[in-house]
Image 1 (spheres, rainbow, N blue to C red):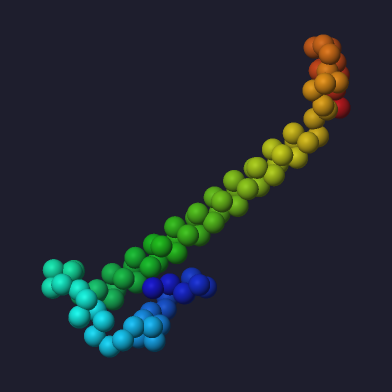
Image 2 (cartoon, rainbow, N blue to C red):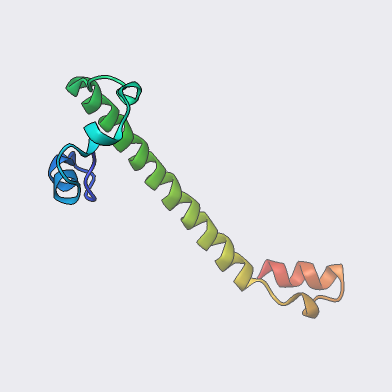
Length: 95
């Protein structure tokens, strides 16, 4: 599991503090057991998740920056009601 800070954390203590003993054994069927988690594989998956999260955060920041730039550009345009001809548009958009 990943903690809120993105660091690997063991969720066992949290699980045990909320659930009574034998919760999994009493509530899951034998077919629910998917196998044992390999610690090295889990670490590799966690690392990939962190890489995806970092890339997602970077692309999200780029998207938000582009949205701000677009909004600022639109706000700087003259009101369309003030443009009566193509000449007006050329003059007002050169500024």
